[in-house]
Length: 134
Length: 211
Image 1 (tube, one colour):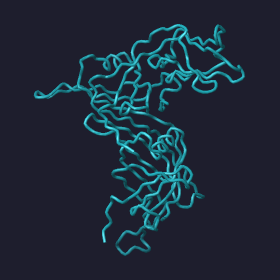
Image 2 (image 1 turned 90 degrees about the horizontal axis):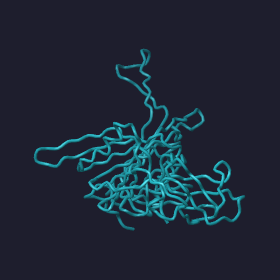
Image 3 (image 1 turned 180 degrees about the vertical axis):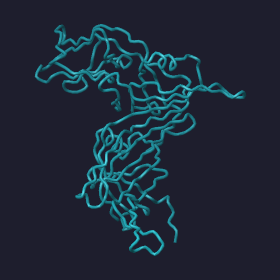
Image 4 (image 1 turned 30 degrees about the vertical axis):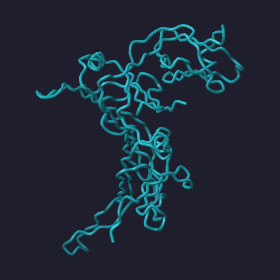
């Protein structure tokens, strides 16, 4: 059964305890890392083979800019002060084992405003350590 | 919780410095004195004269205070005790709204260094290092050549962005990276400006929220 995205929650925390909702409109989580080619003459069957090296993840989110939103404030301050944050990516909006959590650094925090639109923020986050399911 | 329409957003640029004498300040918190007149708060760090007075006593810039030039805040050394009135003689930078701006973006970015080691549990780790700010502004051209003058003169320009004309303020010194002009036969002449953070002052960018 498919999962509607409108119930998704993106939560930000400075201490991994108190969580604040990000007013995101189109967040995405990318789970990747290094894929190492170990194809060799001794063991190949005519196909490449690989094993996984360092794992990595990143999050990007376009958000509505809200003047007093704590998550946006924490993201901006984290970038300006070079601190780390915690993120929860919850497809069902709750912690039920279907979501992900990890520590991140803010790669960029971009504010945008068009006369015919809303003030918005585009955020990109890079993983800093382990990504776990929650 | 309410969204903020951007049509009220203001973007301002800094103009020619203006000299003022004995400008009053307001103590906004202990030992922190802000220029009272909001129009005169941006202090030109290149002022020929910057003098801070405790009543009639000239304070020593080497030991008695520090200055936040963008917010116009004088922070006095706590050992000076109770002061007042604190006044400042300096050049302020007036801000004028870009009357034909129609969109902007301001990106707070920089370098993110990889700190992954054998002890980080199989996941990459990272640390923010040098920060950087870039901006782009889209204007209907007012033919003032303000940005062209800055670029050709190799001069930095002070830019203030106030999203939704609310209390959040992003302000910094920028160099004009590009100043592009275009206009279709059936449209208006437009100007696209890209800006990069300049090296005018040690603190060349500030994001603050007014009380």
